[in-house]
Image (tube, rainbow, N blue to C red):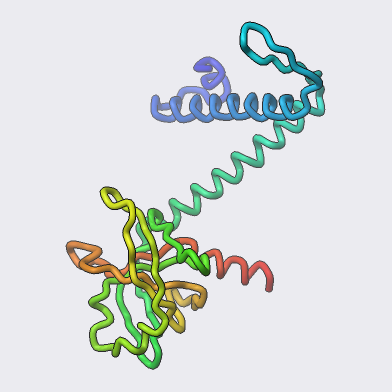
Length: 212
């Protein structure tokens, strides 16, 4: 594999060589796995020997092509997912929360580790510090209260109170199908941000743009 990488790309830094070879082996094993999975699904028979089950099938060109296509679809989906994650990771910006007749403005961080959703509606959760609601009468949000279970390191059965606001605005985009989760305490020790955005909220905007 080192020789193949050298012939294909010439002299490269060691870090790039390792990356190229890793991709090569990932594609190789991915292709083999897809072909094996397809051959098992279309196996023509099986027999047992030494307490092991052996399947046999005819390996055809169609099977190899199908395995190659399946591998391409899998890796393209994985690459697209990782690119989106890397693109959004660590982005901070102003977020505006519409709660009744009130509007809260604070700084939010797009947190790729936040995959929290409200279990009944399935809407993604944006976590904010509860302190931000000071000055807003509880009646304006407590009547819309939601119970959000969550799991963190050291806490497997946590419960967070939340509610659905009228709207959320972030990066000049309006989000409606979002739940606010209330965090007791500070999200950032330096107060760099006071809200954590679930990246899933952007799928709503993507779906709307695709349908329009």
